[in-house]
Length: 382
Image 1 (cartoon, one colour):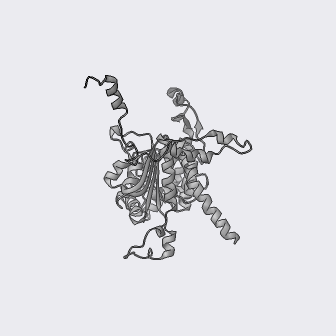
Image 2 (cartoon, one colour):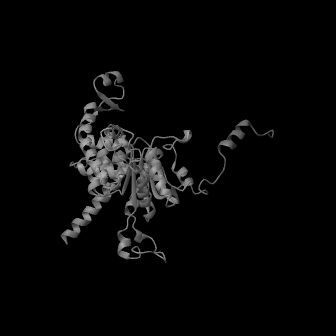
Image 3 (tube, helix red, strand yellow):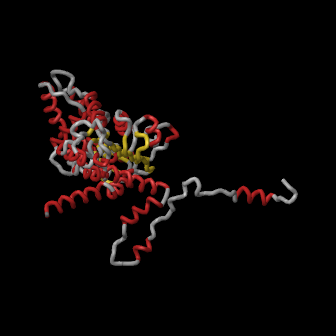
């Protein structure tokens, strides 16, 4: 330190270090949130929620990740094989321009059972009803609760309700949701004759897998509120590698003791992994939309490994990666495994899915479906 240099000078040199902040190319997108004054200019107009959600992209933090997810899903929905140059050795039928124009990205949707416990069920049903997804992976609770909701509702409760009191009153709690135990009794009454019929078909040579069982449940339901109903009607497979981990497992266990000829229904999981992986391998482009973690997330990601990774990926969960959990793993970890393709578009929204997913669907799948229906209407009017 020279005699003329003060400690204040040293501090200033450290704080006001001279650099060119624009040279690195990072300072391009200005952070700016939504200006609600826009909604006061004309009081006859409603609040512009579309503009509000679009502003998330430049808001920062998880709002930006939401905006990025919107962009990824919109690109996924609008991609067509005709967007890509045709390879010299392109196989039939993908050498046909008309086929290429109508070949879409295959969408794999994954969600944990609590998404069906809550009102996200109706959002998922919309996607399946309008054929906006091509394959689903979920857990056992999502299957049985979709069926039970066609018979009896789930009710709002509170996170802090006393467990002992609920148990004595025959009420089961899922977070701040309540399911009466009688719902499971009604479920048993419904599923037992279905399992009886399936067992008779097994005697005649029918081989069951989890997806075929679930499709059969959807066939037996006559309720348009049901995810399973629309999955069966639209031939969208629902995979559930953990089909016995819930009330359905209980029912299969009890039912096995009523089989006088053997040990009950046999469920082949190998045929399902061939079917799921095959869907991924044969797809020209794939997208993954995954709510939550664990088996549903890993199962979809692993299927996409078979094709060297998905092309569009959106995760929504609250998991952190410090413990090495599957839910906590960021997209970049999946890139290292080959489950998300190098150079592809991906993001993770750190948020509780019931808060975010309906908004995400509104900004992507719903807008896309409206465009398709408006297009059909115009064609009919011509």
